[in-house]
Amino acid sequence: EAKEKLDVLKMSEAERAEYEKYQWELHQGASMYESHYISGKIDGIKEGEKNKTVKIAEKMLTKQIDIEDIAEITGLSLKEIKIIKNKILLTNKSKTKETE
Image (cartoon, rainbow, N blue to C red):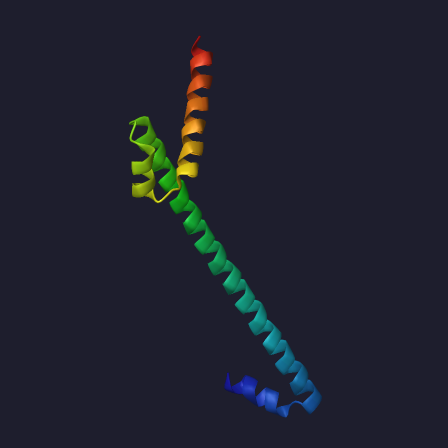
């Protein structure tokens, strides 16, 4: 690192400005990468949590637990639970037709 600083000090003013611009661009690129990486990771965690919540709601629906109770316990909206319930009903109808 000391050698690099010494090399920078030996540069002309124009070369040093170009070098500092290059260093700034590297820093910006690394910051953007890290920001996108963290954002993507957070989104993935949220999506995983949502999927787990939906699976729990599906199990509760198959146990015929009231949708208001499911909404209160899972934090899902009544609309979301009704959509999940309809999906289960459609899946069950398809399975029934396949076995006939």
